[in-house]
Image (cartoon, rainbow, N blue to C red; front, top):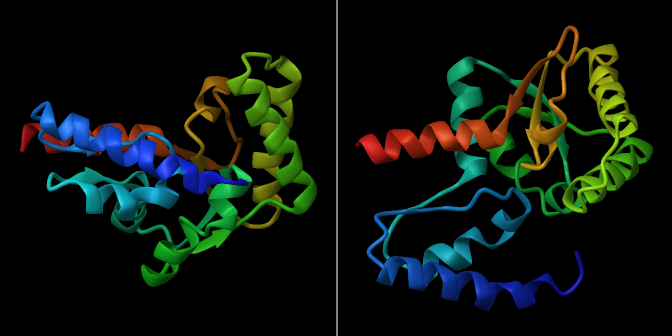
Length: 174
């Protein structure tokens, strides 16, 4: 989360190159990088689908007004979902500080390809803790977490990557 602004020229240049290659629209399958989506949108004339916007639309369509969020600390700190959720009547519930630190470690293990069954169990425990707080729905707002195939007993888990991929297919078909 430090010095991330140096990514902006890389992301906008990549977007421009894809537009020059006649892409009809762009998709960025990373939640944390959505901190720069407006920079990317400003650099191109083609549409840029947002995993955050598509997830918000999906939750509204499903009538979900309160959701737990499992994500990187950057996604939480930048309030990528929180702000859009608030304007759409959706309450975001975050893990506690210790759980968020554990999530950071789990995500690091995933991107380093060093994850273990212990990581999977830890993630399941964090998801399960939402149920004790009265939360019935959780979003995986980190596209790496799907690798652990998380499950919750009484909780419905929504993968933002799957939501975005469905929106992408709809955009292609339209």
